[in-house]
Length: 335
Ligand code: TXA
Ligand code: MG
Image 1: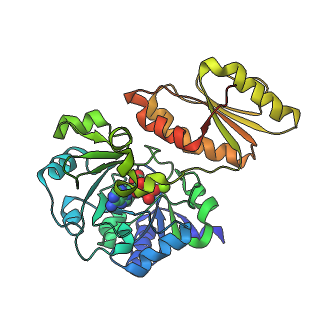
Image 2: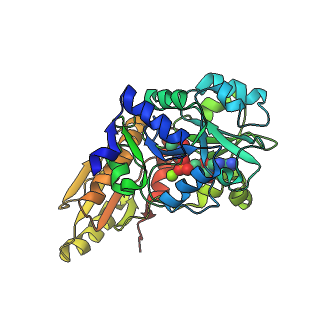
């Protein structure tokens, strides 16, 4: 039954979650970014359960969650000055650092890489659970491979059901998209995944960094195996359109309408007429990010055959949202 697996986070259920984790089980829990599916990062068979539950390919490494800097040391070989400066500035929070791993971190966590990704989440429920468990927790987003990331406990239930031994409900995740991932394991720092902690914020602390997608395309699979992942493979055809392509988007919508199919739209200023599920998205990038995955889940739940998404600006303030939309949708074919 649903309610034995999905429970409100309270001191008692958090204590139960910590015990399940210490016993090698799987717990889905809220973080400020998205919900994670956690297991004891130092227990190889517990970590294997994450890959099985998510149907995630084994080449895609996991992020290890810790309560604080002190706990991070335990999974790392070294803690360079840049890591200290960034952790002091942004932890606990949505910044993941990739560093050389300690020997006792199982290869299954890191997909055989000599490095491990580590972050201290800011969410009070995640913090309480990590402190109660007293072990590092490996946790990818708590969804089946290629599905939309979960920002609410109900999204986790919909995707994983009883595959998690327990789902802690902590309400909607306040950030809404996955953490910024920064490698400190190469000669110079490289941004592997954009997030709400921006390139400019990082550079203000440690100076110039590289951006994987701009400088190292040939090395991308080695440096960031997970970025090959297609993050969202909806049943619906999902297309991005720019405001000036409104007529083309309208024409595509008309084809679907003529077949009696359902259409959802995420838009900011450009409404497509006659669609069943228009969702007006916020004008501010932080608010847009917070609502994006929930909006996609809503459209998926309503059984849309076509999802049209108005493109967001391709500039620094929107870079993390822009990145997620590029992964979730294809550009409109404009003849
Ligand atoms: O906000 C988040 O980061 C969420 C919450 C649950 O903390 N987690 C998350 O995990 O998004 P996941 O598994 O969906 O994404 C992990 C990303 C992948 O792109 C993966 O390739 C990268 O982190 N990663 C993990 N370990 C790595 C490593 N050793 N080197 C390079 N990239 C790594
Ligand atoms: Mg994910």
